Length: 256
Image 1 (cartoon, rainbow, N blue to C red):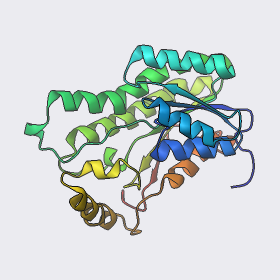
Image 2 (cartoon, one colour; image 1 turned 90 degrees about the horizontal axis):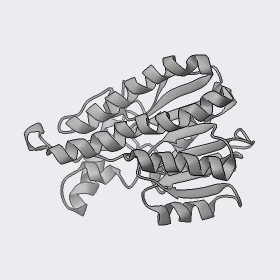
Image 3 (tube, rainbow, N blue to C red; image 1 turned 60 degrees about the vertical axis):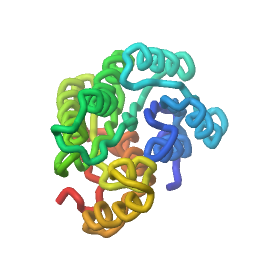
Image 4 (cartoon, one colour; image 1 turned 180 degrees about the vertical axis):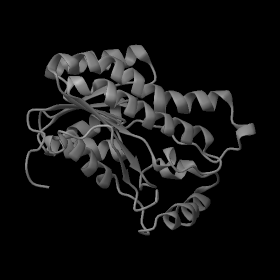
């Protein structure tokens, strides 16, 4: 895509070291944004930052489920770039098929913390800066599983459903401050995380990707990280300046 739709903007992308987060960070930088790449794996985030145009990337080690870590990341963004215009919550963890009676409390807590609590924590710390500027765009990457459940993904579906409703609540709460909050629901995507939804060895995982995921998408293909990045670019830019509280399914028809 030609142009500089995010020229002069500063964006935070969590989970930016790989997959969708990496694709979003790279597209945002190409479109003129200064990007903070927040990820638990700082080395991988730094590698992505080095792939961005000079001066456009800044990697910060962040545990999105930890309040102090998130607060420090927000402050480092302000110190580095002076403002925050866009926040993309892309960090997430999967769940392999697990019957509810076998799901441990530790698994439940981790999935809910990374996939849902993180949205609360990042919003808690970024909103004061956006309110002061009377503008901002928050984009939360949920999942088609948040509106269309699958067996054995009990905690994952719950976490993504909660992420969607939290986003809608924030959209109506923050609208008077000109802060927009929207959701992207990816369908099954060609990322390192996809195979982690399937129990078994490498052959079983590869077979499962085709039998379970591709066959569930009416358009017959996996979603690419770049597809999600393009949707995020629209929601981050002034092209969507009047759009808030929306849930965009980027799923090849999976949610129909």
